[in-house]
Amino acid sequence: MADKILEVKNLYIEYPISIGTVQAVSDVSFDLHHGEAFGLVGESGCGKSTLGLSFLRLLRPPGRIASGEILYRGRDIVKMKDRELLRMRGQNIAMVFQNPLTSLNPLFRIDQHFVETIQWHEPGTKRDDAIARSENVLEDLGIEKKRLFEYPHQLSGGMRQRIMIGLGLIMNPDIIVADEPTTSLDVIVEAGFVDLLNHLRKAYNLSIILITHNLGLVAEIADRIAVMYGGRMAEIGTSEEIFHRPLHPYTQGLINCVPNIRMDQQALTTMPGSPPDLVAPPVGCPFADRCPHVMEICRHKMPPLNTYDNNEQAACWLHEDVETQLHPSSEA
Amino acid sequence: MSTRVSLSPAGAIGKIFRSFSEAGRKYGVEWWILIAGIVIILAVAYIAFFPQTLAPYDPLDQNAGPQLGAPSASHPMGTDNLSRDVLSRTLYGSRTILGVAFAAALVSSLIGIPLGLLSGFVGGVLDRVISLIMDSLYSFPGLILAIAFAAMLGPGVVNITLAVAVIYIPTYFRLVRGQTLSVKEEVYVEAARALGARRPAIMWRYIFPNVIASVVVVFSLNIADAIMTEAALSYIGLGLPAGIPDWGMDIAMGKKFLPSGAWWMITFPGLMIVILALGFTMLGEGLAEILNPRLLER
Image (cartoon, rainbow over all chains, first blue to last red):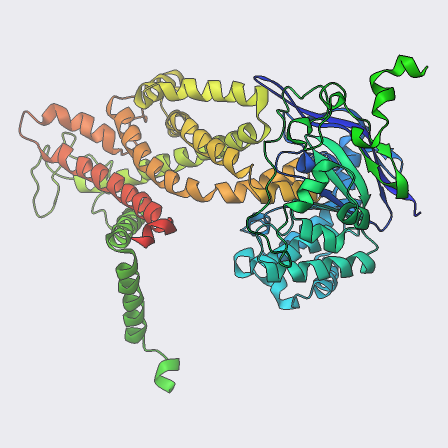
């Protein structure tokens, strides 16, 4: 397997608020390999966006990384000095946000966005050189050069999203974190976006972290998928494994909720219940209350994220020898 | 076709006039309020810059005519108790009031805007401290505060400008701070941070330009207010040293001779204060309406 470019180790992120502390991300660990597309999937409030922002230390106060490590090529982002962090943003890791319609400064032309971004990282760069580089990127994105001199409101939503990706790519980063990149785009534009991302991945030798609740999108792009629930990793595996042999009941439920045109369904399948309260997270498995296969142990003890066949990781007691866990002394 | 390319001067004026009335139809009465405001300001600005082209006498000339002479052909606005020509004094007085009001609005915006940006952007303790100072300034009635500062600094053009400027700083501060707080949350600001923008770049390149538009309107309305404040300060004698023609001071002096029937000494400077303040108010209101695209939906 290719070398690891980003390693997240036992990451905890919390938001102290008036009624307590929200445990937005708890004990999350995963690796991103060079050139890999990694999908982060989960429902609203599961901590996936918070996790995404933490890679660039962009958490909004009072949000903070409580403990853990985020290693980019061995350097810990959590402990980075501001100067180093500013250089890393855009140059090593870039981020594309949810809403392309408002991601560009309405008072700047597109070329000003590009020139400024380049000059933040390479202060001496001449405007003409910066423009030439921007035009090259624009070409890769399938946007006409003359569009460079227009204002954001003159471009369509899909174009603005591509411009945002272009800005992310202009400094040649290794990793692009895309947080719900297609939420406000229609399906046709979304399909084009998928093709573009797959093309850019090869052209720029990128690793991609795709954060979304859209299982269709993640299936088309990601090599591996992590399913998050209640701020924790429920399951991590290859796309193939996640969609065809999901181990965690939550993953199974999530996939069942996607309407399938070939099946003669009467009504949309839904998962009963709601996500856990992250201010007072349950002692046991966060999914226990909604799980169709819930057992006694699930309510008392958090299942560890263990590795199973085909390198697939899941945190569920169903796949453990529950007896030994309940009575560890009897085995010893 | 050649007639369309080369326009005669009359044709050009007609064209400008047509585009004016077109804008008038688009924006309605607000457009004409804006135009009226601009015309008033330009007229007074001309008077302020070139009073010598209009004034028949030196404003300080004490031998211009009879003492307390009523308006006549040689003195259209009469003469004051020191035999000076009221018309000339009124024309020259515009220079003082316009200069002081404009400079005061400029000084207060140059202090208020950066403070508001910094306070809103940095937040935390700094924001608390600056906001507290600004709120305590704001809680004073404007004129009382200006009187206190003017009394402290003493008379003089620079001092009166500063005294008037102080009371408008919180206006800019509050406006800019509020806007900064909302613009700071925009996605494009977060996107810039994600691309490696430093804090000064975010503040001056991303937040400031998106905040400044709302300041233009307030600036114009502030000048109108500053005109009143300047006139009030010099009326009560805290403004300018004697010798500089000034509307507020002339009204204060004219008041003494009103019982003896010399109505012209206070009427003309008073009228000018009203017209000038009205001009800036109309400009501000007109701009506020026209710069707000939502109002076009009516």
